[in-house]
Image (cartoon, rainbow, N blue to C red):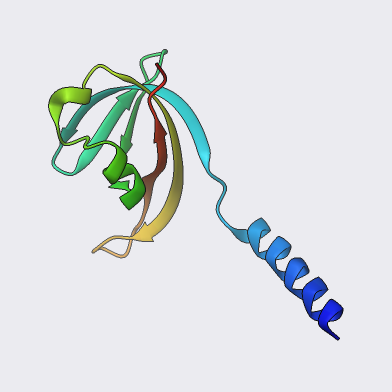
Amino acid sequence: MKSILVVLFVAFTSLSSVYCQDAEKMNGTFVSYEDGVYVFTDKDGYNAEFTNVSDEVSQKYDLTNKTYIGKQFIITFIVDTEMDEFDEEIQVSTIVDLFMPE
């Protein structure tokens, strides 16, 4: 009986991870933090804006401090779709991990 429960638990965990949102990665230079938006630029000049940062990232790097402007980061993020105050879908990007290579 215990082995059946273990198998079911593993199967459920595996299936639920399939439905979890996939994280994406990018390399970028931190440009600014303004009005609650974190802006990074990639090597092609594309600006990526993030409206949320996980608690873990906030503890590692205080991006509201200008110290990190111009620094390179490897950014792991997710994009969620939410409804705004006008009942329109908007994309909300959240940084879930941040690494500054040396």
